[in-house]
Length: 501
Image (cartoon, rainbow, N blue to C red; front, side, top):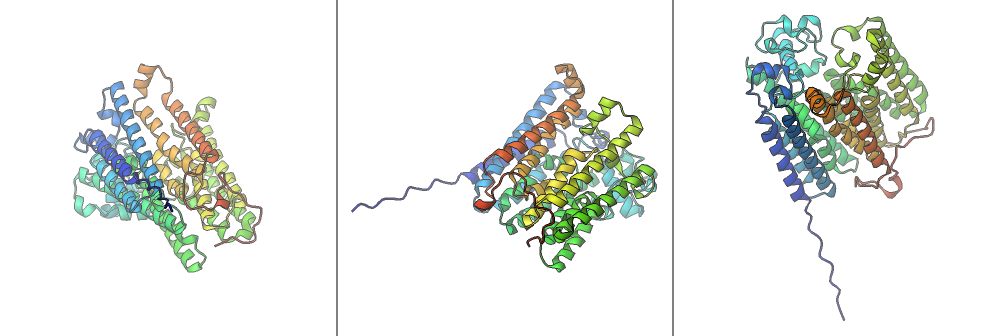
């Protein structure tokens, strides 16, 4: 009588792949960027920001920087593949990796944006001068402050964050003193902390929803663009994203006590920055599915009122802190319309209004037709709303804004949305590189309008990636049952009688 032997199980190499990719990524951030372009550089260059101001060797520096970013992106993809395979303590590894990657980028000067310098001055204005940085009497030019004096860009322009962002952002002041570099580093640390907290909150929510918590956390926290923008450039949008993820984790619950706590967390998110308010009507449609049509109408009416205030030049939208929300910037596809039709100032305002009208239409469509029967459905609907806003509708898109949608896309359990959002973050490096070396690209490759071409390539590549995710096989392994593995977006019949908890 023969006894068949079980085939030996293959060893799980995912932890080794993850560790190796993470180490290489951190080495690139530390030695490839932070050491070469550190905060010890001339403070005037730091204040103005621009990687090409330091790496001024022309095409060779462009080539080396592009290569390093490609390697970092490859390491990120390998980390995600390893986290998808799952291994022991993978969630802790994803969060720990986020911390290590962020710390590796902290010594770098802000690489592509001067906003952290303005922000460091603004939090001091809020705490030390007791002035509102969102008004013209709180701009850096008004104060003789060692940090405010280093602001070179938008020196006479107010800031655009909420009071909670300034309140939390003041945490480093007691440790930084009056040192410009220490205050700037403090804002970068805050950006890294809240990116980590956002990844942690998204992972914990994914675990509650039966998804791969480590993969979701890794998508957010290990993302090269997020590392570049938060512990790198010192933006604070991750504060808003963190409170937004916490809010969404509460409003999906059936009890009104938890939903009320979610509303409080949502208000905290809006008090950091307004952006996630754009998706809040979707939550109302989930709570009261019988009233989808009137709720969509109210959302459109409220948005129309805000647009009317903008057009008439009255109300809080014109306090000077509107910033990119009322502008058409070079890396937005709305810029193409601006160039093709030579719109001028009045035409630009029309384009801005048209972009937000388009979002109101998309929002209403999501509120009425998107399936909102389960908790994951709501998360996916919020992810679709914020991703579509940034991809189609935002005339003032900046790459760090992608944190507005990335956690919700990662939590959506939808292949096309997850793949598309990740591709959106990674291809966003293309316009960044083109902006910094546009003269070099014109001279070396004879490319006219390289920023516009790179923006077009980013948008097309993102769309292609989302299509591949929609048509491809289920690679996410996020806990779906066989009956719910449909690849594309899911929509509901009109006026669902009730939404499932």
